Length: 167
Image 1: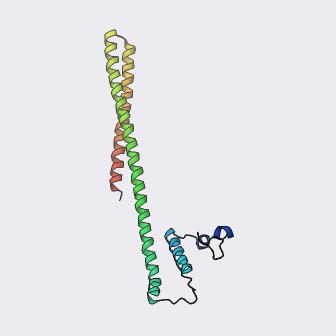
Image 2: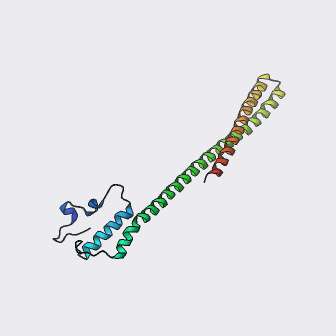
Image 3: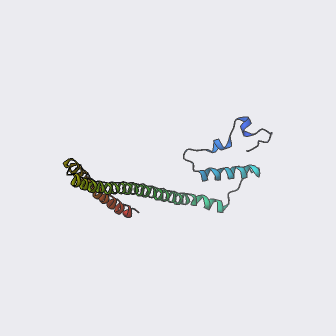
């Protein structure tokens, strides 16, 4: 905390140097740099009116715009990279979810196949057509689920191609 010469701190007086330095859209690094300059000037008790500007300082001021533009390009590239990474993660999560659904459907198909076999054997053994009808109903459900698995496989394949195509 910055202490004023007469012993009162900024907070006690209700004045904040940091708050005065804040400008709309000011980056964290810029605020830190401004604070360092402010503290250095106050620590050395430099009077700005008498301060001489060196050629090196003037050259740095001239190059500030190009450094700012380079930093801005770097920041935009990082944001773009993060966005692509986020999209890739979402796509990978969607693919994983589809694979999970496909696996569940395949397990269901296996269970239906087993029930079809059991009901068919039981129907033959008891010569009961209602059991045969049940087995046929399981076959129809099994066929529907097989088509669903095929569609899921196509969707997964398509999404994996899209994922590979992302930058």
